[in-house]
Length: 442
Image 1 (cartoon, rainbow, N blue to C red):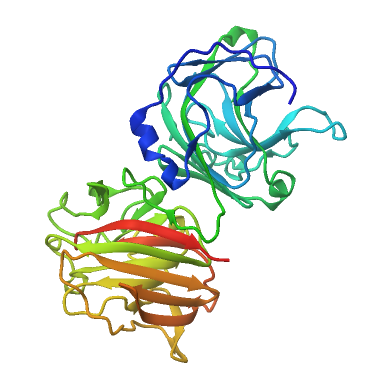
Image 2: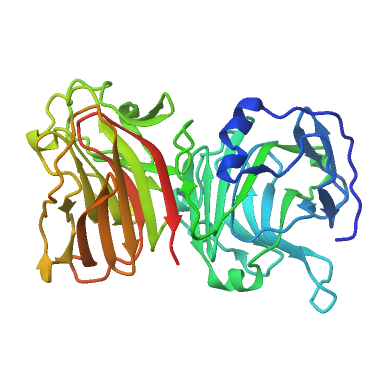
């Protein structure tokens, strides 16, 4: 990195409420100090960047190639969030794991690598492009001839938009305004770009469009991949990091705000409906896990929704090894998964249910419910639940006691279940969750 920064910096104060949601105790740190650009350097072009009131604004230059405001630090596996606002006719993006070409490479000095797209709707915002890699789009969607596939309108033109990027190994996931966009696994780009700088792009434009601007604020990052450490999956503020799927609704839709945050608790409620209407729901982690310990505390509250099945009274669950929620049918009640049942009132909690799968239990193939021997606790009482998943063996723990163990989980067609999303259930009885954490295992 060679060029110096062109900027005008003024004292800025970050948004306190946003910073509180991304605090250091959860591994978050600001990517930008809110005051100046001392942690960045400009690459390639002549666009200028300035800081005002905690906002970085990039302004086009003519003539100029693409310009990148790149972090001095490098990042491999990470989660990045930011808010962005872009002029409608300006193309932009955020580079990840990017670097300058070496003297031994073609076009030395050129900043290149994966880029998360930013542009007006309808468009390809959030999809992943191979900036200067010679590959064009890395995401398959923009290559489609079907407009319903190759573009969307999740980005709100002329407004601030919230982006979230998760890069872990060869997998890159993106979200705009809490809606999933890209989910790319690309071994080829990961081999050449396993780690690198983050860069804020101002695209080159023609003279007739100059000047145009793109602005960023609330940039936070946390590095991932530390096995052996407990990580919070729920920030207590919103449903960031989770994907909702409700029977009868599309992925990402949350009818009646069934899943919500109340007083810092992840809450299931059907108070927006007069009747349950078979609205079985699941809220999935947006990441996939293989070997791990997952723990939370749960309790049942209030009255069951009118029309809820009798068996669903004081009934919820932790669904393990779920396929992507996008693969669930519109009217599919439960994901194919191994369910750690969370039960109350005269039933044994920590039991097993096997929608769309089977397991080996006590040496026998099992394709139905298996009851634990742990009595349920009264409604309203917090209960600790922990799932331990390791190399084909799954254990259910309740309040520190092992209550269920089984092996060799597999789908009904016999294919093994070795990894997947984790989801929490809504089955007509209001309930709450807290202290939702995971520890990955080697």
